[in-house]
Length: 107
Image 1: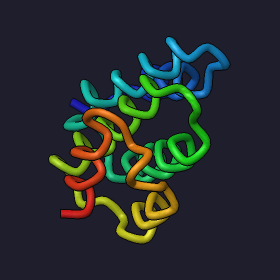
Image 2: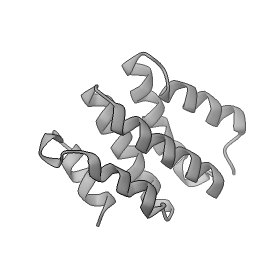
Image 3: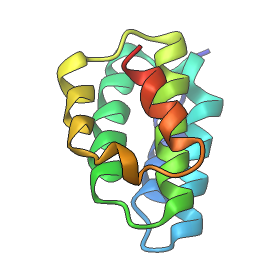
């Protein structure tokens, strides 16, 4: 069953929140929705997650955003050009499971 526009909009709002807890929750919610998204929703969410991760300062949000991208990759073919923008991340600075997620995205 496709994700309703209202549900996706609420998730996107959470991902854009000034509060790190909300941003992390929004990224985590994407993992729950990944299979039900439409291909156009996947493109939008992937671009948003990449842009957010590149500018994210909170470690928990960083991990949640990369994890959400990995979950999307499990179910969808993600745009390589969009993902390659993540190459700007200094890999040695990735902490915890972020390095694992990063490697999985480019495997």
